Amino acid sequence: MRDPRLDEYARLLVERSIGVQPGWQVQVRATPLARPLIEAVIEEIARRRAYPLLQMTFELVGGPFAREAPVDHLRTAAPLQRQIWEDADAFIAIWSPENSREGSDLDEERKVALQLASAPMRERTMSMSAPWVIAEYPVLSGAQDAGMTLPQYEQFIFDSVLLDWDAEGERMRKIADVFDAADEIRIVGPGTDLTLSLANREGAVDDGHVNMPGGEVFYSPVEDSAKGVIEFSEFPAVYYGREVAGARLEFESGRIVDASAQSGEEFLLETLDTDGGSRRLGELGIGCNRGIQRYMKNVAFDEKIDGTVHLAIGNSYTFTGGTNSSAIHWDIVKDLRVAGELYADGRLVQRHGDWTI
Image (cartoon, rainbow, N blue to C red; front, side, top):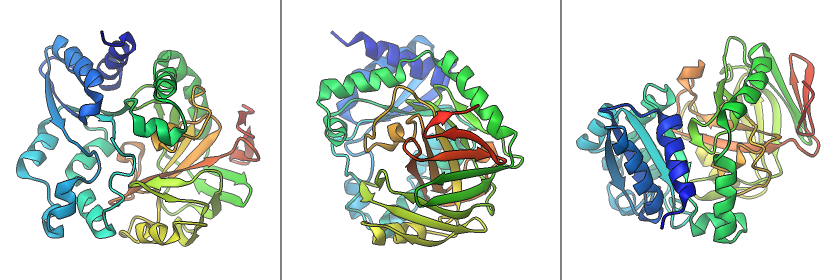
């Protein structure tokens, strides 16, 4: 008998996150490990007289094709795949990796090629011209990274996604109003004093849409505005299964002019040199999910930790006014709960992770 929480989860994804309508074609992508949730999602899509397009894969990042195909062949997706990306009405990705280090065996050239191949889909998702959601399914690799048993990890996921999202949305809207009205944001903490501009940029409230778990307010900063330094000393940054500990980024006129790390520095620098937009910010996110209080080594959770912020280097969201274009979008989390402060136009709005507004 299927866990009834999975049925509730599937309804949340199909009804709220995507808002599936009759006749829609919905791409569902996952690994076989997520079969119980896949089946529940397909049932919900069917009840709405829509069509699921299931794309099953063994590895969500990389895989045998990415490892063996000539690099120039990797840069362009198959015509039929591009057609699906262009014609699908919505996208659901269920994150369920067998190994959380998937993709870490690919060199930088192959990673960039894969990003270029997926550009047609990224253009639709980053502009929100098609609704999409990335959902988490409890698998053993995620539990191990989080230092939990699988039952503990299952409970953690359900506690962070099965929320009253209408109420969460009202609470986060009040936070967004403060930042929408501000021009300059300042982030202060140990080794950190960074300012950036949100002038004429309106934030998005993720109240059960886009990512699941939701629970953030996010912006596309003005591209040439970031100035100062930020140290990500609390948590390692994870990208393509690779870890970078103690990353330090220095900005001038919106561009990273100096970068270092305690470990993984070579990978950090390689990624920053991906293209012309990879040394600029694509996102400022403010974590607001009170059901997430611990680091999981999974950015889908970590960026939502209440009392944190995250910066994404690379591609920005066009629907929030961003114009930075890059093949990468790497979210890196800064914990402000111990000795951090957030300012909006010089006004202290958060101290040690607690709101003062």
